[in-house]
Image 1 (spheres, rainbow, N blue to C red):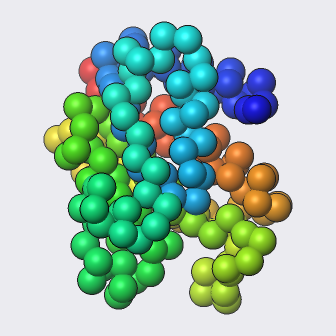
Image 2 (tube, rainbow, N blue to C red):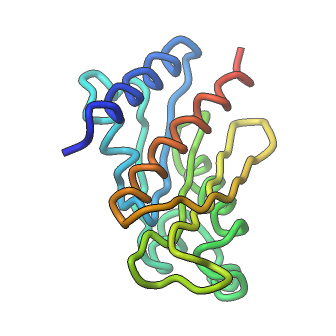
Length: 165
């Protein structure tokens, strides 16, 4: 069950997308589909949400959205390069104007000095516009990190809507 605050943010984002006539796609790793789940929990979201890719494994990233395996091997799945490629792949394999991607270490294990638990890379691809990427390290346990990732992805999409007239 998603918190009411997340559903409120999802509804706000959907309304903003409708105003701009923008459809969305998601490419999710560490959130396992929570971004798409929050958006599609809102009745009528199908006019905005085109599709979501849950690409938890490296093979899924490669097969579903075209992230090159040599890139994953060189940089790791949790990296700026992969987040950017995920967003680009989701955009190119959808009818969306904006695609958001997330890849991170939600914990409790799997972290390292270079890639600590809570590290999430975001990518935002927009039709005809430069790609955006951001790095954040969120505090908390697995549930809190994933919830914060969903809300931050919503903020990035909201910010990206400003580029559409």
